[in-house]
Image 1 (cartoon, rainbow, N blue to C red):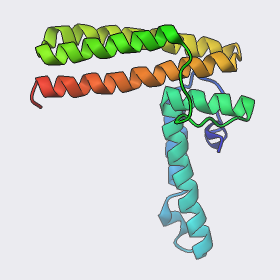
Image 2 (image 1 turned 90 degrees about the horizontal axis):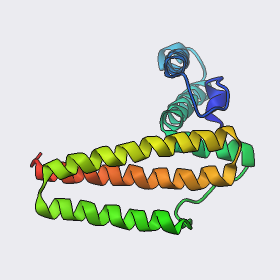
Image 3 (image 1 turned 60 degrees about the vertical axis):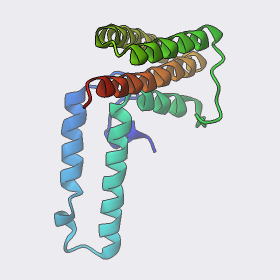
Length: 172
């Protein structure tokens, strides 16, 4: 499935969210079940299936990691199995360990100020990685883009962990 084709958008990391939203609404309106009440059961099923594809494509295009995966797959024809991959960037692996230790320490200390600072630091790192990813995709450096996207996946998981720690510290 090419999510860019579904929304008639150029294959690009930067997407106009307003255009994406308006095309999504138009597609969903055209595929609404009320429009198919007089059609055959097969046509009704196809409309439901197409509607599900539109929803899946929207989720891919809204998520920078999935969007980058899609762009790489479109240009290389390769689908990666993320579960089988391991990051070969030793410096980043060491950084991951440091971040995890830091988060664990913050959680043990129950220090919300440190957590806020740490969260801001990681969000800044995420912005830098997103810019690096955009550049690699624009320059069609697919191997580098895959490696950068792996870093972004880790950052996303770390931010989820930070949120979990924040909730536990604030007893939400």
